[in-house]
Image 1: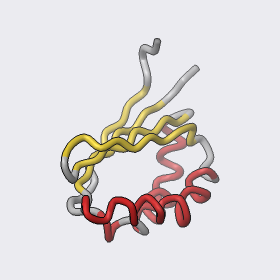
Image 2: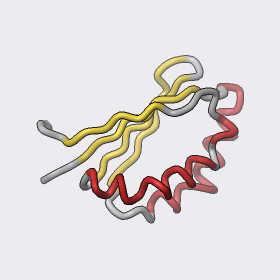
Image 3: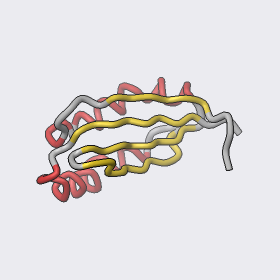
Image 4: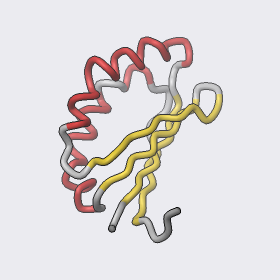
Length: 96
């Protein structure tokens, strides 16, 4: 089973975290669920004002096809970000 993972790190405004989470549930959750090939998304706090999103996909091609929609969706969250996102991704070659 081919899978592709993306890891996105960014800074965010800690003082507005609850507001941002509420907006994510209300404004972008359904949009993300509708993206073909997207299997899961997990958001993690990795430090004060620092976060990481890990998303799993069925293929790199699905990520590439969805990129304009992803940018549109996360553009809705830009007001909470304090640094531009840094994205890395790759095909899974081992899993447990």
